[in-house]
Length: 204
Ligand SMILES: Nc1ncnc2c1ncn2[C@@H]1O[C@H](COP(=O)(O)OP(=O)(O)OP(=O)(O)O)[C@@H](O)[C@H]1O
Image 1 (spheres, protein in one colour):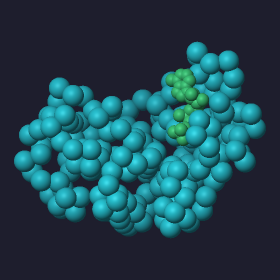
Image 2: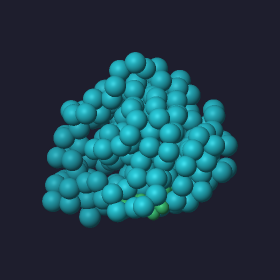
Image 3: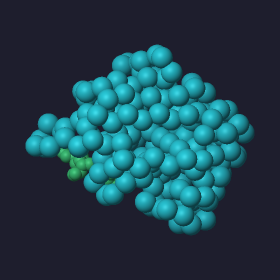
Image 4: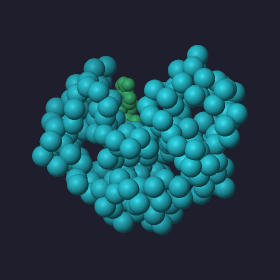
């Protein structure tokens, strides 16, 4: 299965220049793909387009020959650097998770989530604890591709390794595609089967 971005161009409404111009990208669900590029080159923008966070852009996104659905559950799930920004601060973790899917006891254990955390608000958890929830939320059984945009940048080295290990294991086992955006060259070299350089595919 492939996630395909075809002739993607994008300019922010407030901006003068195109950030992305005629970008073509293909991500294989059987591989772990890295996306690298300079700071500000448009990696996060492209990730948002590929996961349906942008309402308007030029070009099209497909999974194989099917266009990405414009509404309902998106089979491409984005994990951000800042999980707190995409969680309702007034909801407890249980409600935040339930909104996506019924996570199994086994996965809670695997991801080191304590049941008592489910009764807390996002502000009552550490960055690492919160990121485990946002990862689990993304690993909905209907998810076909996960995009990890600087997913563990804010976390300590031990937590980074734990989270990456689990995400990679899950994606490999379930044939879920994984796109990794990171400034950490060592991490990209270590975990990715192939690397895409945004400046090479961006015709701006
Ligand atoms: N909401 C926005 N409105 C206007 N411009 C924006 C917006 N978000 C990002 N940009 C601009 O778009 C460009 C690309 O940003 P983007 O976050 O996609 O880059 P990036 O490659 O992910 O950067 P980094 O590696 O630093 O995270 C930058 O010049 C940024 O300033």
